[in-house]
Length: 157
Image 1 (cartoon, helix red, strand yellow):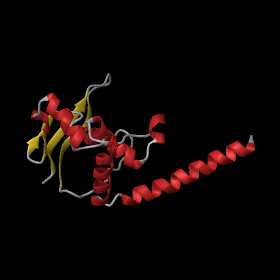
Image 2: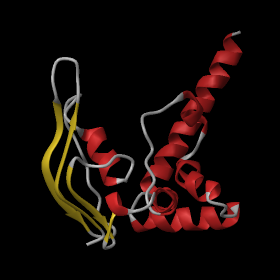
Image 3: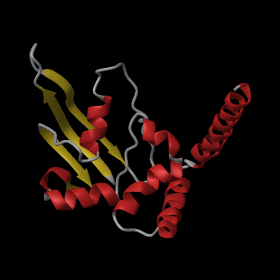
């Protein structure tokens, strides 16, 4: 099992009382598997991803990646793990709109000191491995649409 969550719970303190974000969540993912997480606002989707990626520690339970418990990793090792093993792209910020899918996925590798050429090669392999090449194709269509929109705005001026 590549990623395993076992009985993971996470609560947050709120002025109106504790908020349960995750309650005894267990799941396992093998290499190449994809997982979609859907639910209403406040259901714990972001908390689940943050805990599974090592950005947050669970209050109880275990998060295990390739046999190692994330909550027991020293801070430096956990930071290196997040740069090299897991990448999360959060809801779009203004600066993110200028980045391609490839750039988003390559960013942690570049921060980790990987050459641009090597990072792009590894990213392409990873995207192909998880069948995300469709994301890149959709991105090209979206980029074309944005460029056409910009040209239209310029011509209206």
